[in-house]
Length: 156
Image (cartoon, rainbow, N blue to C red; front, top):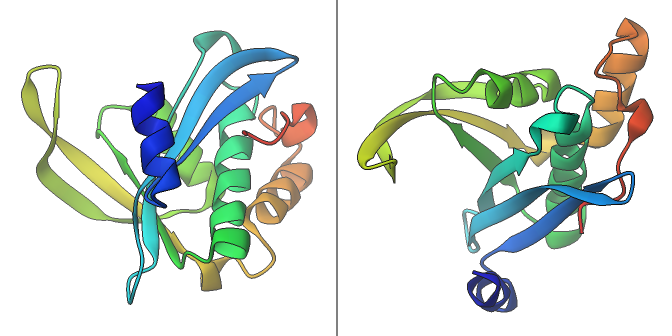
């Protein structure tokens, strides 16, 4: 798996990250399917250890990765594809203000069957000041328990 991730990253088609929280590995985030030319887009996939879920770790990591993609890499659009029943992943993109665009029927083969996925997207123009900045502002106003006060290090 590591060889595959490294090969795809070297070819410019993927950005794999690990997520650390308080000095330990707690998750992984990958920007994959990177397409250049007139599209300049990619899609984000992620997982996080249940022990740190609900602490703002994953929204912060996604925001950092999206900002890196828009500001440094030069992508224009990021998608996140989530199974409809995956409430925790849906909350991540909702907290960050991703736009829901619809459903892709039988999109990915998971657990032995083709599964539907909801599509969420964001373009660079929608977050001119950065996604992390927007996430921090929104949650400092709300005083949310999921505020990025425990911001993890850059997911790299």
